[in-house]
Length: 268
Image (cartoon, rainbow, N blue to C red; front, side):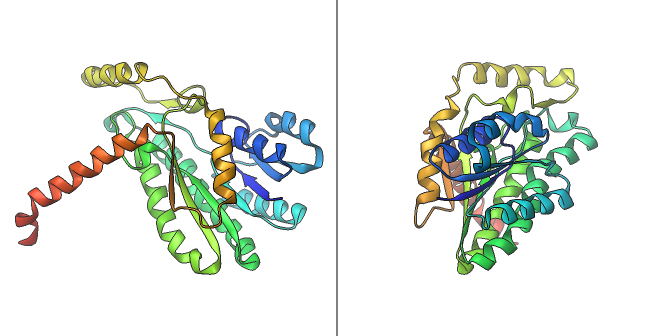
């Protein structure tokens, strides 16, 4: 039996993974901005679930929530930084408030929870941190510049973190989903005020997205359970087959560009 701490557990991946963990007998500290959204989990699983109200952008609240979970269950085995949302808009369109809010949730929220959990995991000499990134954490797309920025930063921080805590018995996995039918681009999304000059780019992006059928996020549950049960989990794991050709093409272009300009670069 494992004990989980999952942010953003009211819907999407967080809700699906929490339900899957509980269904097999694990314990879950489930957090959400509105605690009433966690009532169905609590009613279905009783004292196996600890519902916690948490705005991950509040560092003190994140620390308090992690302490409550550790006190209630006696340990933490899996910490899932899942809370996040999509900010849709061209870089020029993004306001300062929108940019800061995106980073506060997607990057700093994960940082605050991670920092709060690490003393618990270090004292145990074990634990597994899952940082929910995205295909957009490896490849950038028009209309998602600040979302990309938040996930690229999360990946850089997490890769360094893995090297810092690996010798202490703590694993880190960056989970990188492709397109799934979650609320990421729905009700939880934020949109900028559009500038007309970008409309052709925006329309091309919409057309490409409409031609791609998102997968059912429920199919990820068994994969995540197997991941956390793996003795030596990977640093990175795609969810779905869709990211492979996209990221392979991105890395080929990067290598080609670096090599094409190697002569100029080496003169520096």
